[in-house]
Length: 298
Image 1: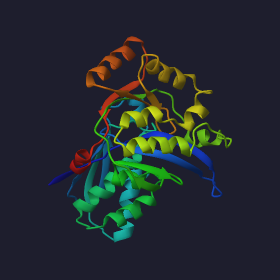
Image 2: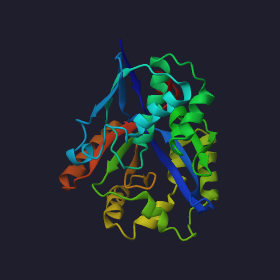
Image 3: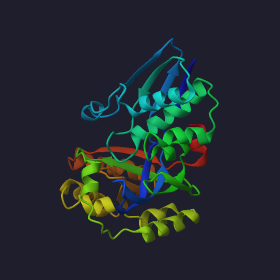
């Protein structure tokens, strides 16, 4: 028997850095939204734990960034669930990567979430949702959201979640420049001042409460754009490529990935061709926001 567990990555529909906390982390206010773009983890019976993976759909330089050893967050999730349950069963586990790494999409955290959910099924551990979320919280600030999925406001480090109603699915173009951004260095540039605030996120939340994803997207903003655009021309160029064509575009997480809101898949295909014609070496992926049905099927 082979079991497949799908992951769903996320975008941030608005992100405000509020202040630096006493513990050295930054307090944020953000909206997480699950998207269909995700990886697959396959589980098969084996006498011990064997972990492998591949990323045939990603450019080689991205695929080479992904480790398939104990440093992978998915394997850390496996060890955490072993420690919690004492389970010593084996499994041959294969990770098929589709989500670009280091892109602000939560791909690695989504894999950790999928590992927890998949092992709970495959090993018949019967852990409750609260237990899974408790384990997830030890793995990273955004892992609890990615276990639950959907839409949520994240405060504190992003790990205090307020569930929001999910709007209908909308088409997105995910655009990942070749540039890599250090999240730690990006946070280091924050001097305590930002035009994006809790009020910004409040407005986005109001649109979500009205099932208005387009309004939420248009109202959103990201402090990391203020911090990174002045020092990375490629990010500004990437965003302006789409905004000057009339498409609402935001950066997700700490970047460098841009998210373009679209009406149809045809618009997404046309934009992909425009990117190629302009000789930009950006990775472009077409996806949609998740609905409740998407989450139930994963």
